[in-house]
Image (cartoon, rainbow, N blue to C red; front, top):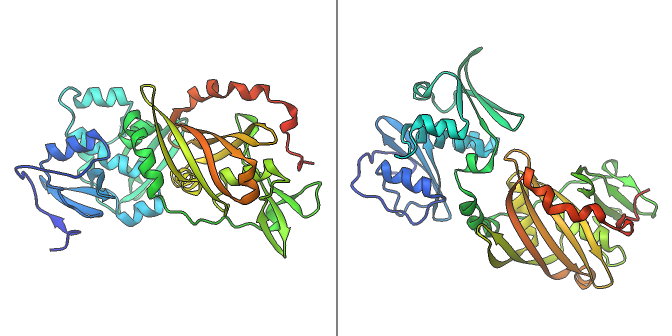
Length: 366
């Protein structure tokens, strides 16, 4: 029997698993008495009281558990953790924690049925007409039958809610998530996307700003043999640094030595390629912005803000880039990383940027 087929494993005596993304996933699998031991990477269906429960395994770890409401192809196209959340949360409502009954759970989580009820969920199938939207830091999800809404739910757009992980669990997974991420993405660029600068053959791709004009997503290019390439030379250190720390197309061989600040005033150190850190942020729906804190004849000190509007959090990377790294295109960067910071808390961490000297202004701007 293929593992991707429906597996009838209701009320097995024991379960075992090599790893779980969160304690809540481990609790759910245990309560449902599902045997997930030795499952390879993939998506698997179990029958639980006549309902299909889907378990997804990746890198020898159970990543999600929930009712089978969306096909894997639909999830891949939507590229949104909201779909995993809905499958898991409906299952949690049917199997709540003992000290957190359903009504209390929904009240504390600010989750509401605006049309239909939990009983309606049992009538849903993969392929049913579905849509969801984001408004005022909340999601609304709708299932339709023709022109009629059969089920509608609303819930907050927060990482802890959608991922099902508490802050400590989320932080613990960052290093592995960065290591496993795929890189190799190149941004397409042409001259129509760029603005001229005061320097011949140098152009700017104007991005947007965040919080104030000192954090931007601008990138810098130069014409080279009828091509457009990212600026990467020590004679233009600030522009080179901007390209290095936020562009997935940067070809520099850079290693990021990270000190990660963890919940409870703990810290951990690890090393990853800088390109993997950038890919991790982009793959998780973050927009990247940078600010230059200071620079001298030895190094540039900068901050990268990874902004996730969909889940209402920021990552902050405070990084030092030696000028020798810009000159050679390879080497080590030292950085301090703070992750999953609620947006309303990040402003106090960036107060120093209000007093930045005007010499940091980019000399490419007209």
